[in-house]
Amino acid sequence: MSEQVGVGAVAVPPTLDEIRREKSASRVAVLNAMVRMLSGEPVRVPKGRLSVASLAVEAQVNRNQLTKGGLRDLGERFAALIEAQSQPTTAHEIRLTEELDRLKNKHRELTEVHVRTVAERDEWKRGTTSLARMVQVLEKENADLRTRNEALRRSNEAMRRQAGRRRLESVPPTPVE
Image 1 (spheres, rainbow, N blue to C red):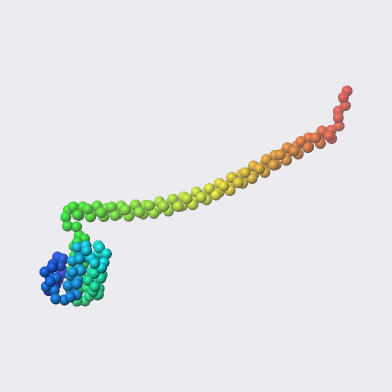
Image 2: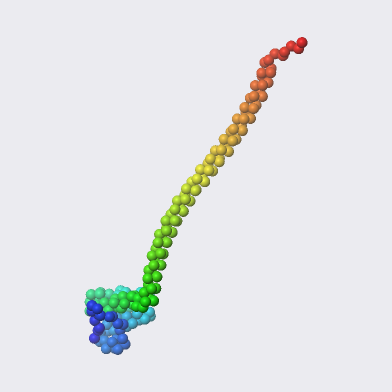
């Protein structure tokens, strides 16, 4: 009593009448799970997680039954319903989908720019830190050289004074006439 989804066929959600007519307990479980999931009220899986695997969990059946076994037609039907649900149907939905795609691309581009900018900033930070260390070392060396220069200047000055006195002592006094 199941509705097959063939090539070109439009998948429709299960109806209450279809579920009542179904004889197989596992098929009833899958059909009920489809209704709950498509209406956004699943019991066993997170809301919005629409996949054949989630349908298997919600219906408490083996996933292989929905993909390769006796419930394959229901798995294919659910996949078609998910696909149809995700396709825009009105001009407004199409515009919104295009705008969403454009914004997703823009977001991706901006994320790439952000990653490059952060990497560049980090590189500049490393360079700045390195230069700051160099400046500190050079300032220390400069201070040490100034201190040494001042000590040498004082020493030189003292030596000149001392040399000047020696010169005066070694020069005989000039006779006064």
